[in-house]
Image 1 (cartoon, rainbow, N blue to C red):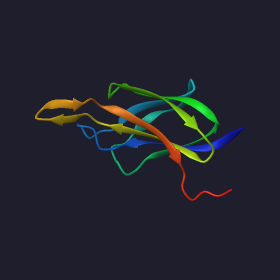
Image 2 (cartoon, rainbow, N blue to C red):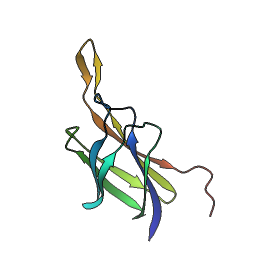
Image 3 (cartoon, helix red, strand yellow):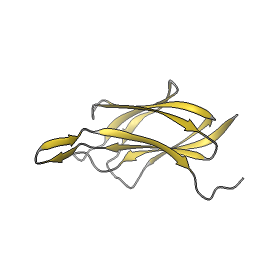
Length: 113
């Protein structure tokens, strides 16, 4: 049985050049979205998809940002998936954290059936 799952795709903060980046979202080997995401950290792309209960392999790739992230998530009904781009963190011109995607899931609040 498959349930509606909301996937949020966005950026935590703008990239160094302030532009959008390309992304490919793949869940269980199926291409879900191939597009770009904007540099507005408060506006997420919302993707609706029917996913079954169980472990799902979530991958996200960006050629421009040179990032590949993957995560295995345990999905239940009434959950969302959040994929958020985190640009590189620098201190004194030294990169502390490289750019990456944060992939997580959680339960939707206030949902009744």
